[in-house]
Length: 131
Image: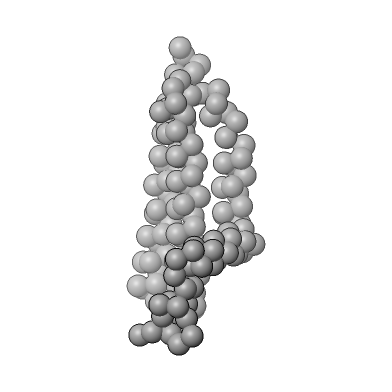
């Protein structure tokens, strides 16, 4: 289906126009998740607090990138979880087993990201203080 009056039938156009408009859609997404999701705000604070320590703990550029990736992975997981929850709430606010499963899977994604962060940072802290 094409959308009239839009280049290429896409709502955000194509080429550089699409990239330009997509950027502003992404910024709106960041504003929304920051405004409506306390968990994202808490994880963002955690990222801001731990970021300076990554420079101290890292033993190599690869190790530093892994530490940074674990912080970004938390934010990434929470963005996906928040999107799933918002969509699920729009579709059905009553208790529904499939919606519940969707939300639980999103929560599991955040748990995996936190587990990775704790493991990676824990190993690095251990090596820092024992070595």
